Length: 191
Image (cartoon, rainbow, N blue to C red; front, side, top):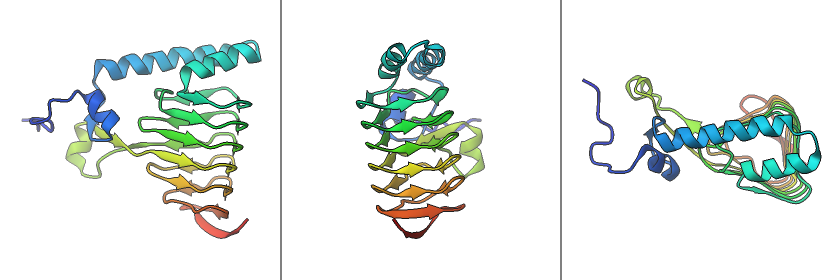
């Protein structure tokens, strides 16, 4: 007999997701928002001029600062939980799974194939098999450089002016004004 994880919780799975609590992604509102994001991502990918692309990006994301350049393709879960600060450059193939909020500061440089991953899953096999998940926000400060192929894990904050070397896997917070490299990423020096 399956476990009823939400017996005393009247909220929808979408409401649980927004609260950062465990949920199951079988909610009609979740599906509607994911389909919206897929349509907008496809339009963004096919935009033929910068003005059209910018308008689509502004519709897809929560907030896009002045002078932001995001090279397609861009992959998101919802888009509505992502903010990008002014003058930030995002190279090709950003995957930003925004089940929780993703905040990218101003003047950042995001290399190709970067992954910003907010979703988490239970370590215990039963709840994971039952498709429970949650998410933790990611915050990237101002003037941060994420090298190509960097992976930022759920709940991580990267401080202002820091540099994350190509291919690093960031599993813990990184302070401001440092260079971090490796898997897991570790601070190797100041900037």
